[in-house]
Image (tube, helix red, strand yellow):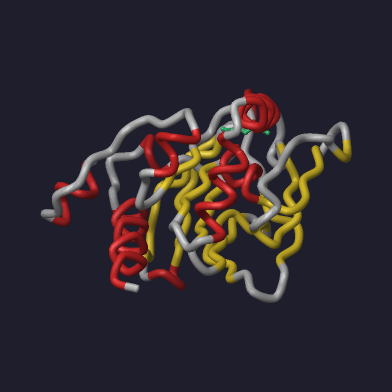
Length: 185
Ligand code: GLN
């Protein structure tokens, strides 16, 4: 909402859970949390399928942390290896879950997202994943310690860190602009 206000735009932000609510959206942020649980729950109530349909038909999506994992084609855990978790199978990347360690290894670091015009950003990493491999249509937009931590592919953008925990709205504003552009198409 702060990003919409900063841009002087009308619009509303709401929490959605059901396929019906999702079908009405112009854009979706898939938040952080626990990707295995989020995947299972959204599989059961049909939300996963609806989200996939909407993204495939062009709706912009922003995956944050566990949301980035859910968007991916492939994920494995740094400690336990391959995980059998439901994924949207859209973002052409392989993810390493818990790539920086456990909860106690959570950290903050100054990063940059130069390719999308954000030169400095406070990255808050909480049991964060990283991107191990990217397919040909995927642009790396941020790296930290040699690890890829933000990517973009068409109408999908994903970050391993939590921009909603800072007061910096620049990344959310970038996403709002992706939604505006998609509505002009
Ligand atoms: N480690 C979590 C997972 O694998 C993600 C953590 C987060 O979203 N902050 O789903």
